[in-house]
Length: 316
Figure 1: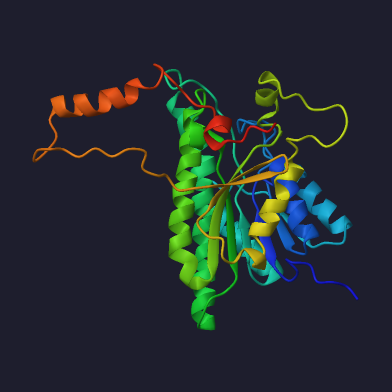
Figure 2 (figure 1 turned 180 degrees about the horizontal axis):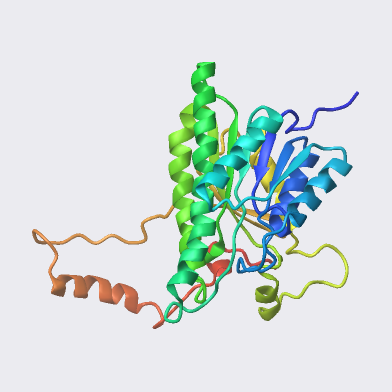
């Protein structure tokens, strides 16, 4: 007797699924039984440069079909509002509905904030943040309409991709860090708005070696091992995406999770570190100086924190 897979009968979209993380996520969702729309604009440069190509998306969709799954490729630009609408419509047309949306597409235009151009800023915000919004906009409208027609909650899952660059900063990536922070805000807002319809929205901060990050990890001394599974392989991230997309995760909503190398960390919402009350009707400069300056003086001048240290992610 064949045991039903957790995502059997469900239809998914994975953006940026032609390579790296998105590819691993699309394959995992298909392995768990979902029919998958594999979206990838197909530009060869990690900065979004080069001619768009259907190749990457088609290759992954073919890989899924060869393994016995259902998949169709979509090569549109999710940062384009109309093309994002067409992506969602393709899933509905091909599979009768949409149940799962995994937003992963992104590019890099790294530069220090004092050197960054307006174009470098706009391009990264457009693909990451606007791209997440565009697909979410049309998927959420689909679920809302289905819920109204059904007279109750329907099945819907959104998994967005943020980054530890948002959590602890990244000196040469002000555009990327800002976009990833915006994605967390979009996720929590969406989670609240769609809960009544049966839809959950969560975000992950994956740490994985892909064409976007391989040089960063190499420069930091995290070389790819010559044998065995790379601790930074995208395959470590994909199972969490599969879980968040599944019925088992129905109570997981509005959450931020860091994942890499066999580790999952649930990140708490910000907590108050210290509180100061004025002894007058309102604060004065002198009173703030007397309260805040000693508080921050306990830290070394210019102290910064690596994401691993902030989150306690160092592995022994």
